[in-house]
Structure formats: C-alpha cells, structure tokens
Amino acid sequence: MSETEDTTADREEELEKAMLTAARSVVMTCMQVRSVEAVLVITDPESSEVGRALYEAASEVTERVLLMMMPPGHREGSEPPNPVADLMRRQDVVLMATKYSLTHTRARATASRENVRIASLPGIDSETFASGGMTADYNALQKEISSLNPLLRRRREVHVTSEAGTDLKFTTGGRWILEDNGICNRPGAITNLPAGKVFVLPKEGTANGRIVIDGSWEGQKLETPLSILVDEGIVTDVSGGEVAEEINRKMDVARTGLRPSKAALVGNLAEFGFGMNPRAKLIGNALEDIVFRGGAYFGFGNNKALGGTVNVPLHVRGVCRKASVALEDVDLLVEGKVTGRAR
Image (cartoon, rainbow, N blue to C red):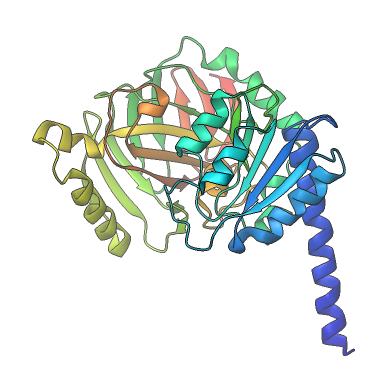
C-alpha cells in the first residue's frame, strides 16, 4: 500500500470514529435513549454513512433498533413509503438522517401524536456530522440558552444592526423560543440537529428598515450580499445579484393564485433568531448556518409554525454575520458575540 493510500485510509478511519462519537452524542445526550426503547433510523443513499453511524450508536444502547433506507427518488415534502410511516409511529425514538426533510410530513405528525421522540438531520453529510455543530456540548448549551430567559421576558422592542448595513426594528409578537437546544427527552418532542438557536416571531406589521444578508441564503453561501427592504413587516425590495433574482422569482411563484391581500404576505418577516452553537460553522448548510454562533438569521413568508396568522406557501431564511441585537436596554449580541448584558 502506498503512502497516499495509507493517509487516505487513516483519514477515513478518523472520520468514522468522529462520526460514531457524534452519533453517540445524538443517542445518549440529545435523545437520551434507554435500553428498553425501540429506535428507528431512517436514511437514504445520500446520507447513509450518517445513518449507519446513528444505527451503530443506538445498537450500543438498545437491541430494539432498525435501519430503513428511503428510495433514491424521494423529494422535499413527499411522504415516506407507507411501511416506513407505519414503523415511525410504533417507535419510542425516530432518527431521520435524510437529504430532504421529513419534518413537515403527515407521517412525522402522526408519530409525534403517538408520543414518539424525533430528531431530524436533513441535508447532513459525513464531514458536517463529524466536525460541526453536532459536536457541541448540548447539556452546556441547554443551560446557557436557558440562562437568557430573564433578559428576554417583558422586553419586546428589537433593533438589529450590522456593519454590512442592516438596520431593522420590530416588536416581538410572542415569547422567545429557548427549546432549540438539542435536548429531546420528552414524549412527542421533536428537534432538528444540529441545534442551538434562540428565535422569536416578529409581530406582524411592525418591522421596518433594511436587512443585509451577507452570510448564506437557504444553505447557499453568498458571494454578493443581499439587500432586503422591509416596510410595515413586508418585503418591498430584494437586490443583490443572481440570488436576489431567484428570490424574487420564488416569491412571484408563491403569489400565483393568491388574492392580492394575501399575495403581499409572501414577503412577510416571519422569524428572527440568532445562533448559539459554538461548534457550528457558516458552511452553506441550511441547518448548520442558522445555529452558528456569530450569526443572526431572518425568515420570510409563512409564520404559522410560530403562532402567527400568515399562511402562505413559502418560508425562506437568510443569515447575516456579526449582527448586533439590542432588546430595549439589553445587548443580546454585539457584532455577533453573545453578551446578554443590560446597558
């Protein structure tokens, strides 16, 4: 065997070990699987290495573990095959490592109603799984996120700025969500992994200003920043190269067939949050990007999942770097660094 082959084999072995370590974190820390529980791992050809690592880690805890391979033709929003859906609702824990998310399927909703604990890792790849946000200390992350609660309560006016040009104000329309911490130990709970963000529903109609997205958009790293103007909670202009043109096309498609008053809501500022995961990186992966520490993200379109009233066929997100976030007299972030200090 040549020196190059030796080096390649060593790297592959190191990657396998790192993936198994991350998988053990999912099984033991995030999901807290017990020896008497039944676990189903769902994967597909694109994410099969992650799926196998999760299966191996679960097998170390319980003998009641199955690995199911989704068909290669599965697409975003499609229901899993009936045998998979039937198995999902019969488990204690379901781990989904697939290219396309199964979170918004009827099969997942049915399993949640049956009190199944579920973790979804859509779009995950081996390198990201082994070395990114999945390697965080989720117990420590849960404690840190929870510690922000006293600062977030009873303060509603938010001002987001950045050196890149973001300058946006809005009023919160609900409580800040602090449960995206990677710990999924309650019956019926569901989490995306990697986890680690704090987010909120902006009150509809209150956001005004400019957002500059200079990190990533829908998991695509940006070469040209996006400039998004918002007036009374609605996007009025998107500019910034080919990605901006694609966003405008998507919004036009989403407006098709809607009455004018509802069509305008496609540009609704639906979500705002910031990453808390110190191990996550801005790499061009939709889930990893929104939890990386140092970034803030904005979601547009449908806000029903957060308790809003806007029900339109679009929800998209963009991440900006080194944002400063002021919540009345509290600096939550200063140039991307989590401070949580009252002024």
